[in-house]
Length: 524
Image (cartoon, rainbow, N blue to C red; front, side, top):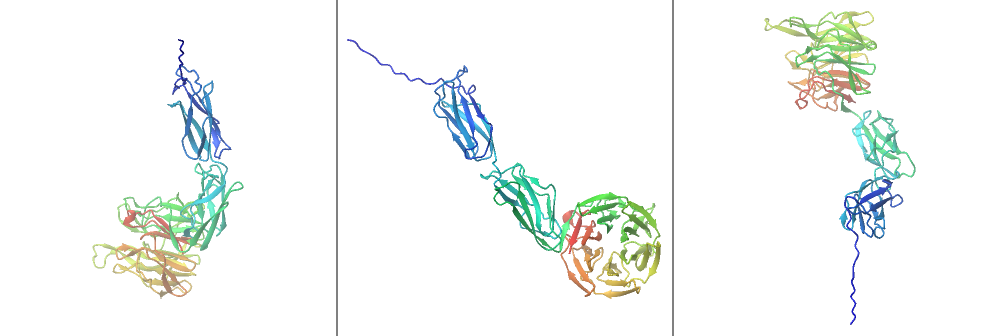
C-alpha cells in the first residue's frame, strides 16, 4: 500500500540586527506643511552578518507633534530596503525610529522641520501701557510672527514706527525675529503731550494676517521717574543744569571720605553719568548757580589741615565747553548751608551759616550763626554787592527765581525750627516781602521753578525726611499739593533741566539702605 506524507513549512526572515540595520532620512530638513514638503525614510534591514533581509515588516515612529508618518508599503525587498515618508506641521527636530520584525533598531534618523512662510503677526507684550509723557514705557513692545500652523517664524524683518503721539523708538530697527519668532523694539518713548500714543509693527512680506499690528499707550502728566544711580554716593551736595546736562557737585561721604570735590554729569538722553574735572576746592553744603552757560559753585564747608571746619567764601566757575574751573572773587561773607538764585544775569547768595563764633549760651563752644545776608555777584565785572538782608535768617533752605523775583523757601530757623516761611526778593527795588507760607514746614529741601511755578520738594520734617512735593503759584500766592517723591529725601542736590525737576543723592529711606546714590526726575 502506497502512502504519501505532506510537510508544511513557513519561511520567516532572519532576525534583524539592531546595530547593523540602518535608518536614514533624505532630505534631513523640510518645511512645515500638510505634505507638500516631506522626507523619505529608508530602512535597510541586515542580519548580524551584515546580509540584507528581505520580507521583514518595518514599523516607523517619530517624535514631536503635528507629524504625518506614512508607513512602508509591504515588507523589505530583496535588498532589505523599505521606505516611508514623514511630513509635519510642527516645527522642531524629529527623531524617526524603526522596528524590523519586532526588533528595535538602534540607529535613528533626525529630521529638522522649519517654520513655513510668515502668515500671521500678533502682539506678544507691551500693549495698553501707561507712562509719563515724554518717558519710555516700562515694557518694550514685542510681536510674534507665525506660519499657517502657528509655528514661530525666525528671520523676519519687523519695522516699528510711531504713528501717533510724536514719540520715538530706539534700538535696532527693523528688528529681525529671533528663534522664537519674537521681535522687540529697544524702547518706545512717548511724546511730551498727555494723551494717546500709537506704535505700529509691520512684518516684511505679503499675505500676513494682522499686519501691521498697533500698540497703544497713554501718556500721563505729573510723575516721578527713577534714573541711573549716581556713581559717587553723597549728601549735602549741590546740583546745577546747563546745556542739556545735569551736574552733581561736591558734598560729603558719610563713609569716611569727608568732603568731596567730585563733579559728575548726567545726560538725560542716555540716562548715564560721567566724570568731569573736579572742583578746585572740596566742600559740602555749598550752593550752585548758572549764569550765561557758566556754572558757579558758591561757599560751603571744608575742614582745614588741623580738622577745624572752615566756612568758605570760595567762588569757582566751571566752563562745560572746556571742562575747566576758574577761581573768581570770593563772597564778602563766608558761609555754608546757603541758597543761590539767579535773576536777570545776577547771582544772589542768600542766608546760610556764617563763620563759627562762641555760642551765646555756651561760649566755650563754637556755633554757626544763621544769616539773612544777601550778596549779589555780577559775572561781567567779577564783583560782589551787598543787598537788603532776608527778613528771616536761616540755613538749609531753598531759593529760585521766577519772572525776575527771587523766592526763599523753608529752611531751619532759630530754635531748630522747621520753617514754612516764603519770602520774595525784588531786585529792582532791593526789597523783601512775605508771601503765603509753605504748607509743610521743612529744611534740607530742594527748590526749582518750571513754567513760572515754584516747586518745593522733599526735606526734613521733625527729625524725619518727607516725600512732600508742593507747588507755589506766584500769580495767585497759593500753594497746591503735587505727586510726592518716590521716597523721602533730604540734603540732596536739586536742579531744573528741560522742564523736569531733578533730585540727586542725599539721605534716603531705610528701605533703600539709606542710599545716597539715588537720582529721580519729576515731570509736572
